[in-house]
Image (cartoon, rainbow, N blue to C red; front, side, top):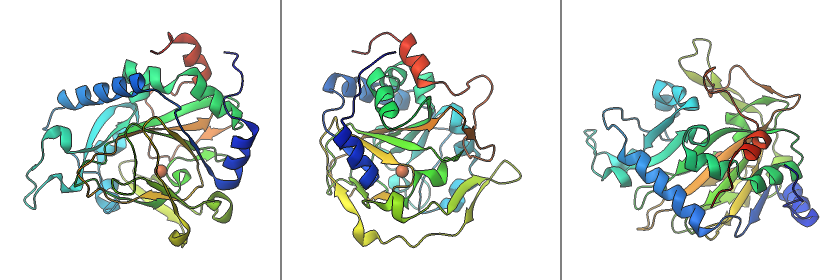
Amino acid sequence: MNMLSILTPEEIERYEADGFLVLENFTNSERIAALKAAAQKIIDDFDMDTVSVFSTEDQRKLSSDLYFLESGDKIRCFFETHAFDNKGKLIKDKQLAINKLGHAMHDIDPVFEAFSYVPELCQAAIDLGFVDPIVAQSMYIFKQPNIGDKVNAHQDSIFLNTDPASCTGFWFALEDATQENGCLWAIPGSHKTYPVTRHFRRNATGKSTEFVGEETPWDLSQAVPLEVKAGTLVILHGACVHLSYENLSPKSRHAYAIHVVEGKDTTWRADNWLQRSEALPFRKMKEVSDSLPLFI
Ligand code: FE2
């Protein structure tokens, strides 16, 4: 691949100052429609007997959940907490009950693969300083109407660790994201203000997880809402403090996110919660981009 830069020097400067960058119209409505249809099909095909609840409100439940831990090289469905009544019975239609899909759609599903390895995205990563970017994980986030769970403030490098740190998020709005339906919020400059002092990792048993390190008291009053139109890409530095509130509105807020890490002279830590089997190793964006047909 030999592309011209995607990001302008001003955009790179803004990213370095703020720790995030909002790029409108990065993707088009045809690609968004293809991604939404692919997500819908995954849910249609989902076997309801293997139900798991994902909630950042309840990290303990999550950390003991093998269903989550084994999802690093699979496509799995995680439910909204409030999709169930207090007896644990599902009270929403399946399509309106899923919190997110994760975490290897980009290496398993051809539509997600084409979207995630599109050359301009690889080039954007290179423009930010990546030498050999790798897509470590993918998530389709539904933020369902009325019950979309909040995502507590965090830094992505807490959850995906490399030595040295390199995690960078690429978050695509597939629908308009507003304060009403739970848009992203981020603290400008937080990637410089707040070093990553905490890590989420597999514990010694390998079957559960734990946080190590001190929690940082982030000043969330400094967070600004990132209200964006469908098709916008938000790039997030791994140390940028960000969050989203619950969606109590009647509108969903679909988003697709991939997390990219450096493949050159960088180690994927063996205690990361997310691990790949030998059958599905991480792939280099440049190589996959070159091998795929052009996407829509
Ligand atoms: Fe995040």
